[in-house]
Image: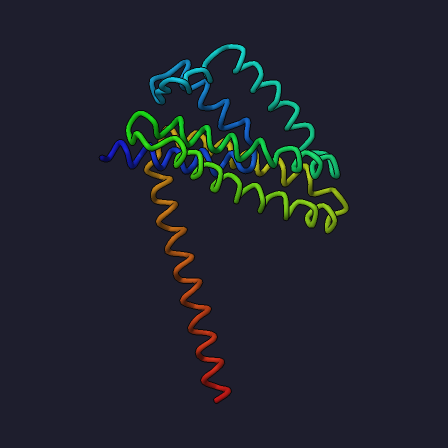
Length: 194
């Protein structure tokens, strides 16, 4: 039960981080599965530990890093990544929940697509505005910060998945408080009008 919850937290963290950069969490999972016992990938997901797959992920990561730091090219890259990031999120969610939860693959894929796709849409929607507001100067800075977040979340999701659970609880509490605050503010405004 506890291991299933931790694997679910890992899947959530890895899938959401794939929405910012598909290759960092994929490469993290592949390398940690190949060289440690921190993550166990069953069939067919153990294909990620193949040297050819690892090399391909490394090459794609380098291309992503270059493209994501250049204004305008980053927007084109985000369009291309519209298929890649949700797919990576789906693979990561399915691979990390298979052994302990035994979640149906279609459900796991759907969860991964929704999580990474939501983050991807938020990222690709905000990037042009950030580039326009800064004349393109903020693009490499924002990209680097996103990459650092993805690295940290990817490792924490595997090594300390209970931190992802705590983060999720804090996020839910913050959303609840924001909705409540907005509702109270609206009710107060309507009370002053009447």
